[in-house]
Length: 211
DNA sequence: GACCAGGTCCTTG
DNA sequence: CAAGGACATGGT
Image 1 (cartoon, chains in turn red, green, purple):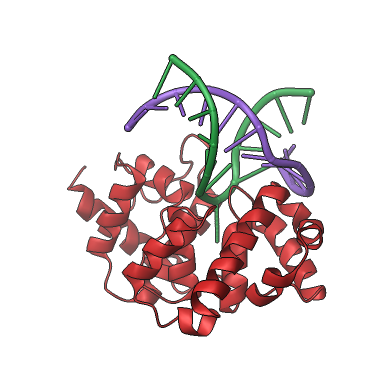
Image 2 (tube, rainbow, N blue to C red):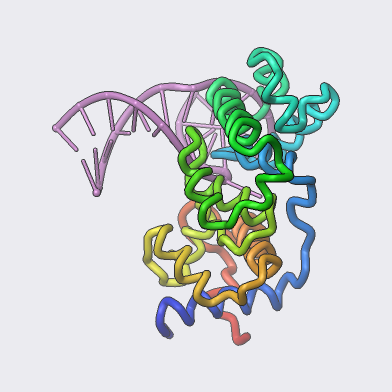
């Protein structure tokens, strides 16, 4: 029943891709992805959508606007995502980083992936998952996102590894194509939301798939 | 009312 | 380094 962790990861990628095919995921522009990546920390996406809508209404849905904005304005727009004071501080830190270090998203996009990742991780409030989300979905880089869902699903599938190890495993198995990275993450999250409870998988097609 | 959500940081032992 | 707590609103 068990192959190597590596081939198990490959199997998950294959099964989910066959099950879902191509699905749209995080279609916003780069500014919106950066902001959403922070807002979605420990938070349901539906609550993030509301905050993004308010930010847009108030012309605050860009790194440049957040850089200039008063913290109170930001707090009031993102309240629905919870942790709104902490997240306002994190958005400010991210906006400051982008504006002061790069001058804007445009020249930031020219930064090599590894260097950009290192530097993002230095920003207060940007951890591994947020950094990889920004890289993968904001800048179309092949940097795989490991979130709580991925960790849980891999656990269900018998791959008992830490998140940092899972990232390596998936990146070994995936083709070097940012779109494959995006799709696989999307599949995992969709699958987890659809079939996996907090503790155990229900009706887990990953467990008893004939492929 | 309890419990949880697409984390991250800070403090303790 | 591992464990525990804080951050906070909204849905089940």
